Image (cartoon, rainbow, N blue to C red; front, side, top):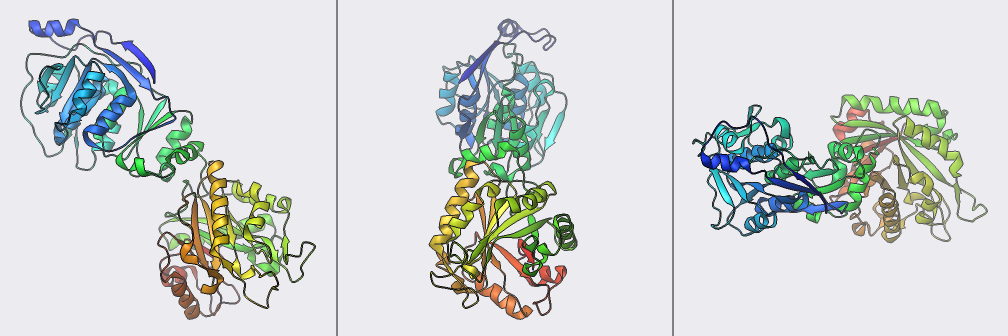
Length: 535
């Protein structure tokens, strides 16, 4: 911990003339020492007393004063949060367990403001007991609230996260009207200390007291609603503003969030995918032009130049904005390696486009908000070998990868004499490599597409590795023909599939009988695909 010890000075004009006990309390000045965690990431799991104590330990070296409320007393906790933030001291909630007493001892607390009916062990700090009534808390704490807000159920975390110490609002639990008046005794005089402005607290909202303690210390608090920091635009923005800030993850789920450290590091880059955010799905529909630059016979993407393809991708995606309630992102599905009728110099029956041929397309797409998927047709070589050829392009945040088993040959196979296939172990090698690349470079989530229109094309698919959430893994139903047959293929591919899979659909301009319109695609293909490509 890096302590910040600041004696708190006398606050003027806070209390009127009081009793001798009050005068004695006012003559003392409370001391607070704040600290910034040494580690980049500190996890404070749980809720209730343990979480409130964990937040206090993470941010406070010492505090002569603390606020305490019962863990199950919502009104007292909310108003206690206002008092703690106004004073700049921790808020602890208790249920009779010893952890709160131990924390009061660690902090060297001399005076406790007990809001509501609180049971504390005898022989500890002096206690100023007040009802959960704003006037009573103001008088005992020497505060002047800037106003009062009634907080509806479910809004506690956000309300407390929004408290500002030098103009703190009294938070009242909506529908509850505690009564009572302040006693004669008051706390020592306190004033706010210099904030720890190099700390960001990510809070799921389970520990209102922990959030209050963070705000009392001056830390920035972002209520996440979940435990993956990449999923929240507010978290990405907060961490990107200060990428070197210490991060405290406050909430039960953070302890079990796999890879929380690298996810925080990724969020702190501020890099976003086309369409916003760092996670692909849900919340996004990719609409893609399929093809190879300069080769019109391989799909729509090659029928015009680069500028024309960007325009066409936008035009292809635009009609979907009227039929879905999610962000529509124009996309290039760019064939990087093309299946060949001849073995070529390397004998793999695949023509690999040089990186420098693809780079202008990939980089221009990124500048224009177009997502890119590099498609591999490997012939007699394996997918991982070909994927590694394009590592420098895949290291860009807006570039994903597609594997096309139709063009994955046996060692003695030839294209068009058979439909290729791949074993899941080979696919899982790509999963591991691409996920590692994504994590090591702190990149937003990447799309990995697996093209399929026959079950036999991917053997052992039930063992597909879906544990790496650096990736969104998708099965793309890319068969052509009559709508009924295509829907049958869709159903067969989905039967018994892992629920974590994303799904894609392809519309063929010439081969489908007939090709579905955007509205028909959304209406007839269920569930709605996350990628719809055009060839």
